[in-house]
Amino acid sequence: MPTALITGGTSGIGRATAELLHERGYRVAVTGRNPESIARARRELPPEVLVVRADARVTADTDALIESVREHFGSLDLLFLNAGVFRPAPVSEVTEEAFDEAVDVNFKGQYFTLQKALPLLTDGGSIVLTVGIVGADRGAPGATVVAATRGALLAMLPSLALELAPRGIRVNAVSPGSTETPLYDKLGVPAEARAAMSAGIPFQRFATGGEVAEVVAFLASDAARYVTGQEVTVAGGLGLGLGG
Image 1 (cartoon, helix red, strand yellow):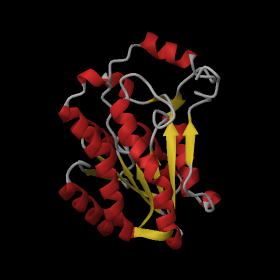
Image 2 (tube, helix red, strand yellow):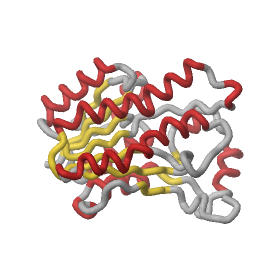
Image 3 (spheres, helix red, strand yellow):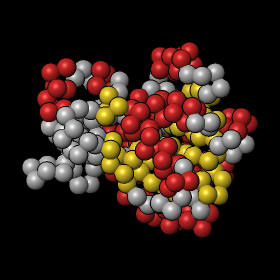
Image 4 (tube, one colour):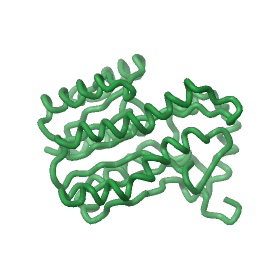
């Protein structure tokens, strides 16, 4: 039975991926740091799914997480590094505290989770990084910090894929566009603003978490056994036109 660890897996895309993989026969562990989303996940996810409170900023939490996964699963076939924070703000208003949090969660925390999980990853396993369409070649006002920190994951993708290729471990990234997750509620984005955003997407709607989860599942599967070092954009055609 294949196994998967999903950071940031108690809500949104991470949770949708956990549900999909569980349906397909995976043993799944998810992490979160928000007490409400952790409690909800423990109530609503299948009881076989391991829900672990872990703050990606805290090395001791990561050590405890990996030990828990080792005890429950013994090894890992998929590591989905999905945890992240996004607090939009113009450059003039970004605080050092917000900057440090984004670096610690979006990049440093994911990097060291990967490092500590590597001994558990089976040869031929899969690592998937969540990046997002705002990065090196696309931008949005107020997104400088998330672009830099998520983009750092994308920048290391080719080197990481080459380094782990001798073990047959594939490393890829998924970059969602606008997706129906609790994030927009947390940010207080009103319905009319979401409608305007949808109008700018060729498919005229946001993605569902399940649609992004399907791509993650593909990258983890044998169907993608010869795919590594790639970024898959899941954005309904956003950014393809001459006007962006």
